[in-house]
Image (cartoon, rainbow, N blue to C red; front, side, top):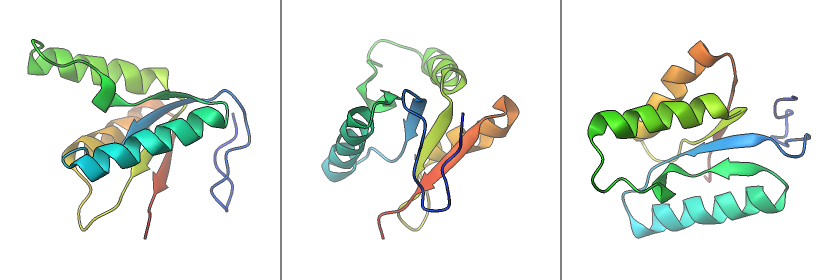
Amino acid sequence: MTPPDSKGQLHNKGMRLYLAGPLFTAGERLFNIQLEQALQRAGHDVCLPQKEEVKGKTAAEIFSNNVERIDWADIVVANMDGPDPDSGTDFAILIWPTRAHHIWPTFTH
């Protein structure tokens, strides 16, 4: 697996990506879906946690599911927009070094 180059380009096809980012507004959720679709068109398998069903699940079950998805991924694509990244994105970044994988931070500004 090759991490993103200096221009942020991913060169390997078929990488497993965990897409971390804010999802508190309709605009944020739409941006995440559009980014997911663009990454899928580029040939990658993308986990977008906002699409996971959480109704009826405990906080521990949601946490465990997210850790499993992070372990599954080759790279965490982390949306770092805004004055402070959201707590879920922070979690994905903080847990990642223990998994010996790569983080690809993204900014739209």
